[in-house]
Image (cartoon, rainbow, N blue to C red):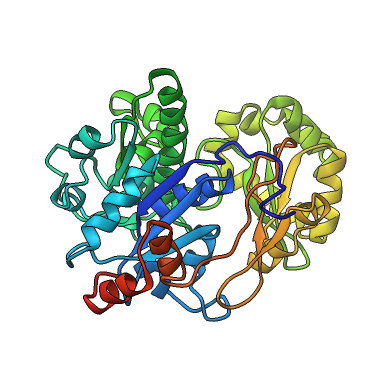
Amino acid sequence: MSEQNHKPRPLDGITVISLEHAIAAPFCTRQLADLGARVIKVERPGSGDFARGYDERVDGLASHFVWTNRSKESLTLNAKQPGADKVLEQLLAKADVLVQNLAPGAAARMGLSFEALHERFPQLIVCDISGYGEGGPYEQKKAYDLLIQSEGGFLSVTGGPGDDQMAKAGCSIADIAAGMYAYTGVLSALMLRDKTGIGSRIDVSMLESLVEWMGFPMYYAYQGATPPPRAGAAHATIYPYGPFPTGDGGTVMLGLQNEREWVSFCDKVLLQPALAADERFSANSRRSENRAELRAIIVEAFGKLTADEVIARLDAAPIANAHVNDMAGVWAHPQLKARQRWSEVGSPAGPLPALLPPGRNAAFEPRMDAVPSLGEHTDSLLAELGYAAADIAQLRQQGAV
C-alpha cells in the first residue's frame, strides 16, 4: 500500500526530531514512526549514531541499528559548526516532539532544554532520556544497559545461585524499558496537548524504568525480607516451573500455577497419581523447599520420553509448556508465520525481514519503511527548509552537515 493512499494512522502529521544514539531513544522513536509519525534522526556527519558500528551481522549492517531505525529520515548535522544551529531551529519550528538521549547536560548546553525551547515553541513536547534522570547524586554518571541492570537489582535475581553465576538479560532490557516509557510518555503528552494546546516535558530515567519492572522481587523482599534467590531459568518461588531435560537430549519448559494443575501433572504427565498426596509436595511452598527431590522424580520420568512426547502429555493435562527455542527457532516460529507477523523493509543492504509491531490494530497498517543510510535525507530535508543547492554545498564544506 503506497504512502499516498494508506488508511489514516494515529500519528500521521506528527513530526519528531530525535537527537539519538544506541537503543533507548531510537526504540522510542521507531515505534512513533510505526504509528505514522515523521521521524527525523539527527546524526553526526561521518560517523552517525554509534550503534551503526556495533556489528555487521545483517548483510553488513548492525543488528541493533536495523532493529530500531526503520521508517526514519537521516539528517547529518554538526551542531558545533556555523549554520547548523539555524537548521536545527528551523526543524524544531515545524516539529511536534523532540526526543534526545545525549550525554547528561549536553542538550541543555546546546540550548535544547525544555525551558529554553518552551519560550520559542510553546507547543513542542520534549522527551529527555537518561540513565538516572535529572537531579540527584547520580545525574552525571555514565549509564549503559548492563550498569543499570546492576544498579536496578536485576542481576541480584537473575542467573545461577552463586554470586559468580549472576547473569545479565540477553537483550538490552534497561534500554527497552526506558524506550517504552518514553514512547508512552510522548503519546500521553500528545493527548495532553490536544486538551491544553501546550507542550510538556517528559523526563525518563533508565534506572526508574527498570526498577518499575522489578516490582515483584522488591515487594517480595519488603522491609528486609529474604529476596528471591537466583534460580537460573527456573522460577525462584514456584515449582515445578522451568526447564527439564528429556530422553532425546531435548529440553522442555513447563510451569504449574496451582494445586489442580499439580494433581493433573502427577496423574497425566508423570503417570504417578499417588505423588500428588506426598506431604513433601502437597503445596507450592513445600514443592519449592523440596525441589531437588521433586526434580529428580521429574527428570527420571522425562528421561524415558522424547521432548515431543513430554509436550504431548503436558498439552493433554493441560499444563503450560514451551519449546526452548534458539534464534533460528524464533525466526521460523510457526505461530508468527501463521499469524503473518513478518513484513519486509528496505535498507542500504537491500530488503530485510521485519516483525510487524505487536498489538495489531485492524483500523490501519503500521508504517514499515526503509532503514536509512547515514545522511540519506540531508539534501532533501534542507531543500524542504528552503536551502538552495549552493547553500547546501556551503554547509557541507563548513562541516555543518
